[in-house]
Image (cartoon, rainbow, N blue to C red; front, side, top):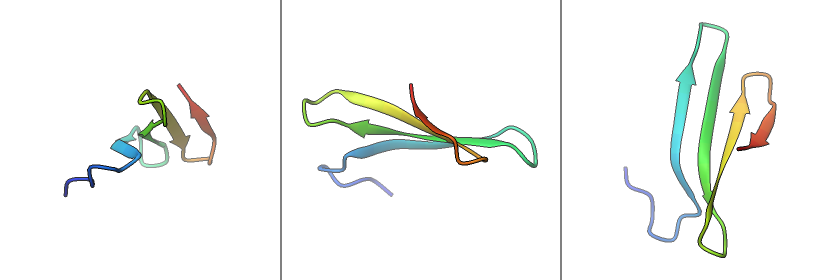
Length: 49
């Protein structure tokens, strides 16, 4: 399914490392037009690249 044209969150992804470990990320489009990638890990740690 395609994201709406005005969607601020783009390119979601999920990487499964083992049966217990995963990392997901999404790109966030900022008001100035740049993007920032945010990550979340299975233990709820969230950080930007």
